Image (tube, rainbow, N blue to C red; front, side, top):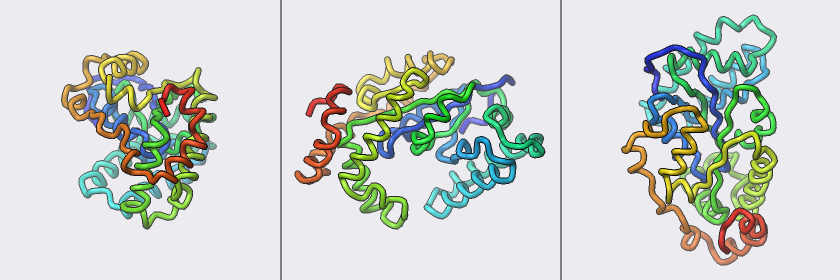
Length: 269
């Protein structure tokens, strides 16, 4: 997060979403590296849109606690709590209102990141709230999607290792479940196509220059200010890893469920 900026103005509010293991973290890090953009990492406060002040605050504080329990580094936790203090301080002026509205969140984020031209949060599961979020005036929704086979391979690998103790993974613990969830995400994305900005993971990692040019123009920031250090970390090594990560049975299951949609999106089976 980049709290220091030079001028004060009402910022655009950015929502980054997509299926887990589709590149949302990479995209968030790229956006946050821009000097005019500040994006938090999975703090989920947009889940509190339309809730009273106390309930909205609980969403954020509950998420901070959850991220601490699941193993965020100490430095990341400190950054998160610093942000929460700034954000809630700015939000206090609206505590007597009936609910915390989208414009209020935008103003409070602008106060938390003074001078930033774009502020927001990345959380993959925002994709399931996209029908609502994409229709909020002033919200800019950015969605990334990826080859369903690589998504399944990467997701299952995490479920069997780093995420194995997390209860929510029961919804993505088989190839069939991941493929079905991927299909739901794509359907939501396509339903809102005219209201959002879409990036294909494979295009981002193989041709970052043109993709970041489009992204910067859409966000209203200078694309040339995405730092070279951010571009140097982009690699296409994740493309095609399903060949080693999925069994023949898992690959067949994913292809059966997603194959037609994959071909319509330009993937080769």
